[in-house]
Length: 119
Image 1: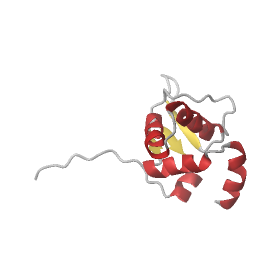
Image 2 (image 1 turned 180 degrees about the horizontal axis):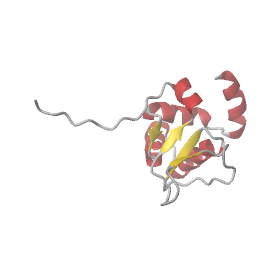
Image 3 (image 1 turned 90 degrees about the vertical axis):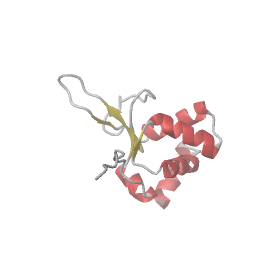
């Protein structure tokens, strides 16, 4: 993680706050508004700054965006390193943390909430 820190701080000055937010969320995938909510409450960042921070994470492929496919194309994840023309948008349903960063931050995979069954 040291090499990562050496490089990222030049491009994303608030990267420590971004990592804190991701750890606070604790999940590999989450809705983008959850990032904003956690950044506002835990890091005292404004909504605009929070959204810009998430956008920066996308620009450096630290997070990908869930893209829903149409009738002829399936759904998938959009990563900037795979598609340099990919655009960030807060209107996506899910954001996914890069697998290497997920491991470093010890994030969990999101699970659907199970409804207990009475027996």
